[in-house]
Image 1 (spheres, rainbow, N blue to C red):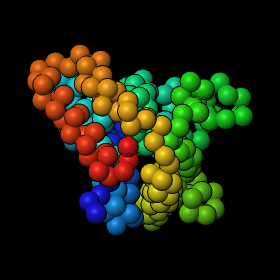
Image 2 (tube, one colour; image 1 turned 30 degrees about the vertical axis):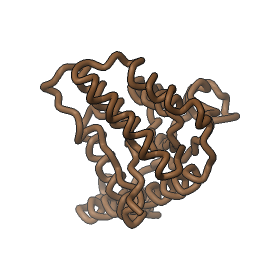
Image 3 (tube, rainbow, N blue to C red; image 1 turned 45 degrees about the horizontal axis):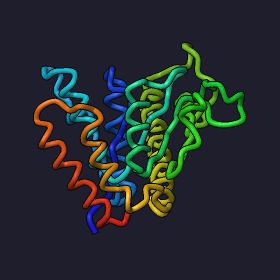
Image 4 (tube, one colour; image 1 turned 60 degrees about the vertical axis):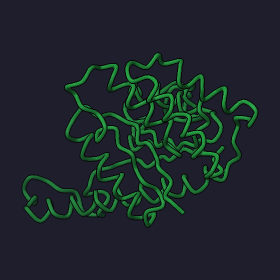
Length: 228
């Protein structure tokens, strides 16, 4: 069986974001033995094109993907990621929401997810909370100070963070395994109409006909994989 593709949505504004996304994506692919193949927007986007062209490419790639992973970090969620999340829910794409930020945020008062309640409670969506902490704490070391810090700590810190990424990857894989078994919300009689609407509502720029064809084929692929 071919792998399930997943769109990896999240911040793309710094080297830390790009590196972290790449490492986690590779870990998910490796730990799942190739079952889940990441589609990273940072590999699709070219900043020398227009802003709309970037948006269009990201939205079409999301709709074409079998699954989606959304990085919900930060005191305020990245607005582009939220738009992609809602598009995925309109398309009834199975999704995993990942938060590695240990800070509490949002308006759910500790009774729900640590982000704005309007981004919670959607079907075919699993949540993974995998809070990051200092490398030394992850490795179980005694408290470090300038006086006892040495180059060995650099290697140990890197190893600890690499292990933490592997742990997070396995949590995401388990969530993917769960969400692909959940029944579609989008009824079969409405699928073609909804996916035709997904071809039109963003008002894609040129080549809009190409995007419409890609979205049409995406529906066929999802049906073949029994995701719709």
